[in-house]
Amino acid sequence: MVDSKLSFSAHLRSVAARANSRLGLLRRAARVLDCRGMLAVYHGFVRPLLEYAPLVWMGAAPTNLEHLNRVQRRALHILGPNILLQSLEARRTVAALTFVYKLLGQPGPPLLRSMVLPLVVHHAAPVTRRQCQQSASHPFQLENVLPPGAPNYLRRAFPYNIINTWNAQPSYLFTKPPSPKGLQSFKANVHYHLRRSQWLWATDSL
Image 1 (cartoon, rainbow, N blue to C red):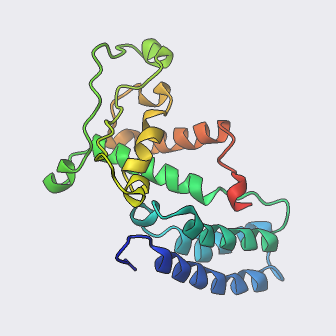
Image 2: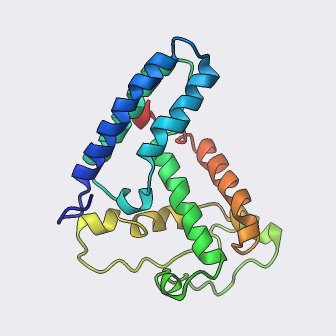
Image 3: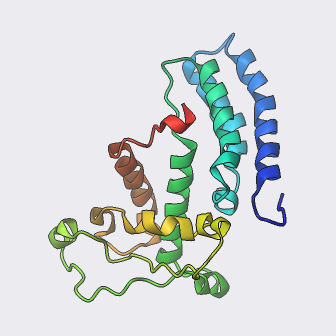
């Protein structure tokens, strides 16, 4: 649901309402299933609604994204105090970083390739694994080409809002150029890095 201001307010309210309606299924499942079974219900029937096509609307204002966080908080109350769920924000970030990696690592349609942001030119890029690990930056950083005076909704939109996060990733994730074969390893390493940064289980959704 697209509005004239690209706020995605109506869309996120609609998604949250649909997901809330499915929490009733989770409550009924709590009577007969253990924690593992309840998590399967949440992962299979509720969370997919909260995460469909996130790159389109992940730049919405925090007040609008909060509608989704409330759903996850309600789910956690049903699942119990010993259950940990990944932050929706962290999962959107991993999805965005993974998509950037895919764009850089495989050809894709010409029109899509033309939309890829340019790489920052590194005049002395690391050439060995050891040098790459010791480097303060990785060799696949993107230029920030956000137009001057851009409105807030554009600053928050993909891919502009992910540039700084992408550029800040540790260099050990890029000991090899992005490629289809390295995609799953990159995604797992990003999850690990965020967990070490202590915001994978962020309080925004707990």
